Length: 136
Image (tube, rainbow, N blue to C red; front, side):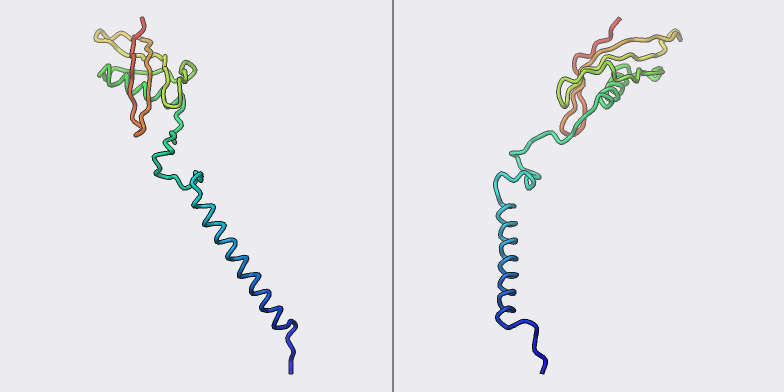
């Protein structure tokens, strides 16, 4: 008759060790995930209202282009300045843009006007413009 390499007592001991290890891992995972300070679970939490969007100077510059297009209501706009060097960051969602727009007036002359505005991005990714001023 063939004898096993381990005894019955060793088999029971190994089974208990594996069982207790599994129970320990599972209970630790449950306790860790239910901890109130765990920030990984707060997907729709009203406590964690951090801004998840990070806007850039270039996005503020492009938003100012659409704001100027709406303001001028003219199809004679030729060119906007594309350098975000004159965009100042106020906070994560607010920027001050100083730029220029080239357009053709009624007489057919090319004109360049500088403008300044404050662009604010909302939570729904729409923009608002404040303090829009055309500089002479």
